[in-house]
Image (cartoon, rainbow, N blue to C red; front, side, top):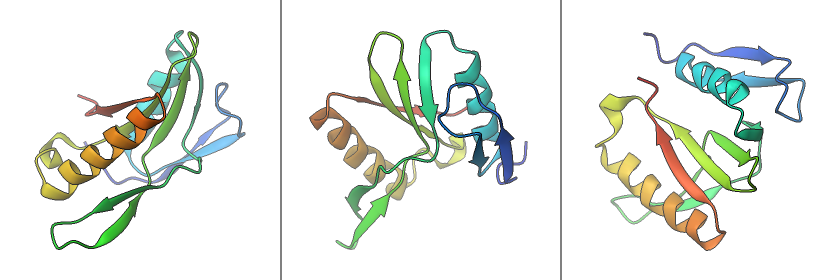
Amino acid sequence: MPISKRSIYERPSKSPWNFERCDSDMERMMMDRLEGDPEVSKWRKRHEISIPWIDGRGRMHKYRPDFLVEYTDGRKAVIEVKNPALMDSPSVLRKESAAREWCRRRGMSYEIATMK
């Protein structure tokens, strides 16, 4: 499956926008999943979340996760869609660690979806 096909997701019912941009087929699949999940009340790809993380050389970067999701029971989650082949990369692991801490401090969860 190609993982870098960019496209527009038109007329999502659970996003506040009339379209969302997809950076990959996996993201489009996640959008379909979020739209069809009865436990998801809202989701958005276009959000303002920017999580600081430090690379292996000690340099600061900003990480923008893929989705902000709100569930019908009030829970909120940040979801990152990731190619399974990249899961063990040092930068992915560092971003994940920073994102988990960022979410924990805000009472949110952090999830990685590999879209198998």
